[in-house]
Length: 297
Image 1 (cartoon, rainbow, N blue to C red):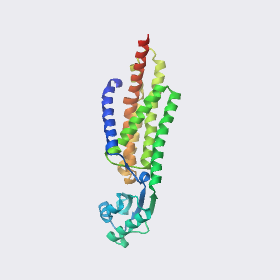
Image 2 (tube, rainbow, N blue to C red):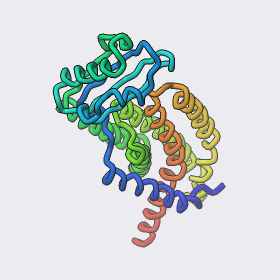
Image 3 (cartoon, rainbow, N blue to C red):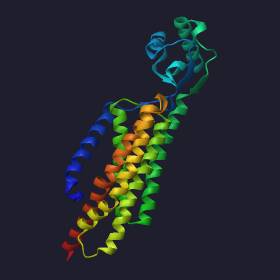
Image 4 (cartoon, one colour):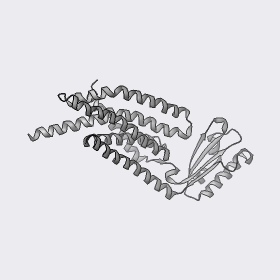
């Protein structure tokens, strides 16, 4: 199979996904969790069967800002996490939630005090958001330096473009679907960067080997042979990872649902980009350099 012949189709697919992602970034923005905006997190257990709709009815949204309510554990455990993004004092918010729940469900049906209550101030949330951006940026710079040292600068730039492609599309899905971005999602993004980079380096390593072994062959042939020779390993690794992530997504519960979703998108996009983004960039760069070299003669 000639993978490089499919690069124009890949450019269209990647370009469309990136365009949708960046349009969503500027129109929808991101739904930051309380880790990044500040707010209150409460874990509450009920003594009777309740559902998310009942809790939302009990809590007056206009007093508590944006609310996120999640069931955790098994259905018969009646255990929920309530998150409120609000700028008023955290203690006041907790008291409002407690009073509203008691008023609606009755004091005997709620286990008090709450099993867990956490507060994040808006300043701390903003600092965490900046730190998350810096972590992603620093990881990309470190990768650029590492691959430049191990391979060549053009390989490093191709891998960085592929990683930015993967991260942008993953975050684009979160922006389009208005899913919450919190610390675990940042951890998922950093994990995606590592996973995608590993796939890309395997292909690049084979290209470097074949450049020595197949000196008389065209660069297009060398890249295609390199991709084909690593394809079995890439597919098996990706399928194994996907099965694990799908298990987490469907059976892991709501607490890690979004983390699993981010990693699910990242694995698919990362596998695709190592073949149809990073490698074609190397080919285009090589052809441009070769054309430039011949034009000087």
